[in-house]
Image 1 (tube, one colour):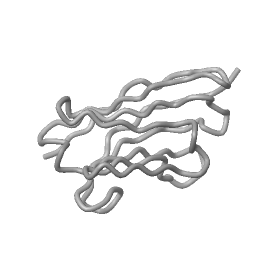
Image 2 (cartoon, one colour):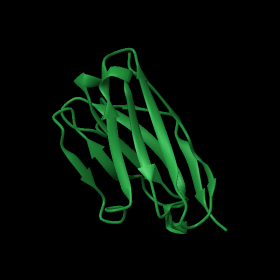
Image 3 (spheres, helix red, strand yellow):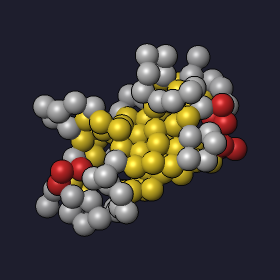
Length: 119
């Protein structure tokens, strides 16, 4: 059974940077499409960035040019580098792993890590 553990969240000032990491255990990450989602208070969970096993990368319009998703299959780790952070980036960030896409009923979720952007 796949397990995901996120780390790296915290409090950061507007304009600052944070790097989130997610480690997959129980399988090989090379078999999975990976993604980062986020959920802000009172809002639905939204897709932030996707990194497929085939090398495709995609980002929500709101984070393009600021966030970068990277995969290290040999370390079973996916990261999200977040730069030029804005208060509206405040959310719980979740790692997701799926086969044939992410976020579906049979995909796996981490427990989430809080990112708060505030002065």
